[in-house]
Length: 280
Image 1: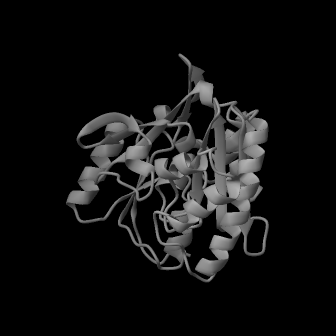
Image 2: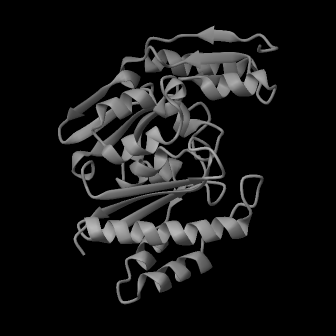
């Protein structure tokens, strides 16, 4: 049960959604955009979140597209993880989301809600980071299309009142050799201790991570070190772990030392699989 009242708005257009947010914000209602709603509902029931207004973006046509056009795969933010997996245009994304939640929750979680939520793991972000996707965002300042790295790589950098409308990915990335591995504390479906998604793009390997630190991310420095074929894989991995760009998490799921141990082993598996699949 949710213990507080709130306004519910179901706009038909991007413009109406932005206007609804601005109106609620001017009234001090601390509005939230709502897509799948699983995280908002759960946190509200636990009294970990309060809002006076919910703006549901699921009726906006641009947020519901799922198509190939002009050499790009365009994903509306209101599409569920199940729909993306069933579409299977991006096999790495399919494999990633199938390990992210059970079927019931995948039917509800939208890609927009997942990427913009408060839970920092955001595992489905990783394939989009590897493919240098673009995102379409709308705010009181207008609509903009920017690199996913500028907003979602690491900490979320959305403007006040900004909402994710679409993710656009160049089709040439969709069927490259890839590998993903997820290590959890106990259950198969759980928050990751270490999650790696990787891609071999024309002989250059790309890596993105979740669960190791407090944000999911991709690092050019890590990519360069792991692609340094003048060193054996073990030394490459040693360099990466010694120079990890963020603090390693130490929490109830796993100690920092255990995460480093798991990271070392999963990076070894990932390198071997990618080099084999990429033909090196």
